[in-house]
Figure 1 (tube, one colour):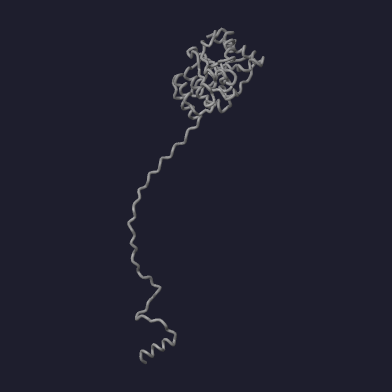
Figure 2 (cartoon, helix red, strand yellow):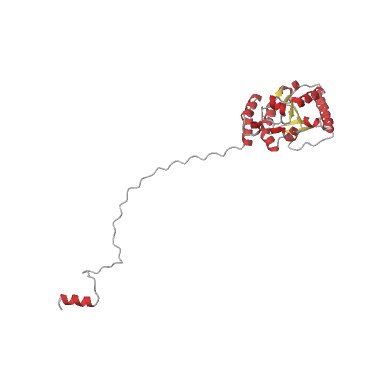
Amino acid sequence: MDAFALLRLQIEWGADDALDDEPVVRLRETARPAPTTPALVQQRAEPRPAAEPPKASPAERALAAAAQANTLEELRAAIAAFDGCALRDTAGHLVFAEGDPSTGLLLIGEAPGAEEDRTGQVFAGPQGVLLDKMLASIHLTRADMLLTPLIPWRPPGGRPANASEIALCLPFLYRLIAITRPMRMVALGAAAAALLQAARRRRAQPDWIACPIQGTAETTPLLALPGLTGLTKNPLDRREAWAGLRLLRRTLDAG
């Protein structure tokens, strides 16, 4: 059979593709040339910014600022620069300690009033006049002691200072006590409650209480008396205040 006849026969049988001389295994993968890739550019690792330390709370900043003061002048400057208490923004003046720290007697009043806020002087206005009369009744004057308010700024509208405001300002008062090292302290109203960390309990007879001083291992005798505001309204407060003043006089006379 010639080649033409064979071709016709294959067409009749349905063959329509030409075949190679050698069989082809189409399932076998042929070797492919490795792709040429551009050289990788080595990237320099950017240094990560150092994590910022957590910001100190206002209470922590108050403690740190107070601890750095070694004199009354430095303490006053630290209080004036402290911006962690909102009372500073609403008060007219900073009210700081006045008097003679060498006497060994510290008198601590309540939050500044309107006249104290206006003048920047401690125990000013009608309450200051009342205090002078009380001291004169036991032959004392302001020159015989150091006087300071519980907190250095007047709360808005003359409202009582709240617990958080007092706690925020206490480090400055404790530092004042640590710097001046009084032999005895007299605290009026809310000041006594704040220093003793408890509500002042009325007693039949006032007495000296060992008051712990924050930041030191020492205690200082403290005499708690009613606040000046209540003395004009409550007869029991006047009786207690007079008994406390007589105790103070006897203690000073005894040395």
